[in-house]
Length: 276
Image (tube, rainbow, N blue to C red; front, side, top):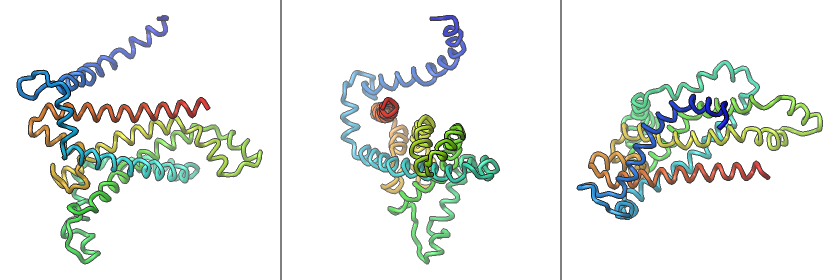
């Protein structure tokens, strides 16, 4: 190891130590507990994982979470990139940049009050439609959850897209236009390839943020909400209250493996396209 590398290692060491103590070691203990019995701590082998895979609540929560991510992630990325492209060369981009992040500053409890004001039995939506329906206890609750996620994370992703777009040198576009390239070709052959690093970061962060929507759903509907919005976080919360440490540990390991697998596949596809 060269002197410069050793110096860099010592600067990074405090962060590595923090990650080790507060993340890696506790997660290693979770993996250990996933192979043990909840009572007595004896070795259980794959029994906990078999129990989790056979659990109806886990299947429901995993399916709902997968559906939520499959709907929200492409929708959020498409909307945020479109807005970033529209705002890229406008004065509003710099003037309202901090305003894009306002939804992130709104506390979850305040968001829940807004949900109740809009969607409960005596809410604004029922007043407009002339009905008396608790929308959070119908299949429409899934759409409300999607809307909440998009609304809260749209501005954040727009800021990240704008950072990637502004890093592209303007002379590349000028040279392309001189050669007769239109807006579509500039976007396809210049913009998209140059925002790939930003896109990877945005996809991963958007995926992680999709798990935070549980707070609003929990506060407005409790630990057992309408079936369409019963997510993995609800399940883990209920297992925690029941002290089902064995199932909770096994489920956490499975969720971590699924998230890590998604990120690794995404990274592999990114690297493969860069090599082509």
